[in-house]
Image (cartoon, rainbow, N blue to C red; front, side):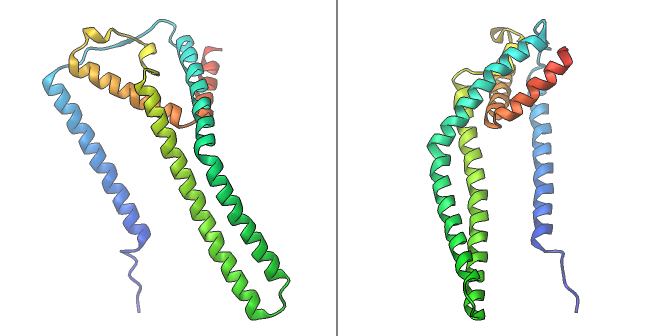
Length: 201
């Protein structure tokens, strides 16, 4: 008897990921061709002393990211933390009960409960990470839409002089990059600052 692994969850997940990757790539190519069909974007230069300006911009973004992380912690993480600690306390209590039980069937029942609760706790933690990241990206996008930008200060450009589609595309890209930087957290921005500092030195 042979086992058919062609439709296993891992295989389907890999196939979906590959298909999604190629779909996004094709869409990006079509978007670029569509933009070039309507207008040829002007080349944009960077401002003089770009590394120094980048350090100033990233330092500001680092502070914003720290503020956003703290707000996220106050609004969301503390509530989830209490629930997680309650689940962990229940697991610890069941483990102590199982260790103090001599009857085999009772001990196995407690161990089974512990395994289920630990699986539930892992799922809870995964959901917490996903929800925290989602909230961080929402906050970061709102901040970026309000005018905090990462790319614009580095570019020697007047948006009024650009074609409408190029101006919109550049601002859209700036918002996405800024939101990703802030939403990704202060540690990521700090790494970029360190790398630029090494180049400047």
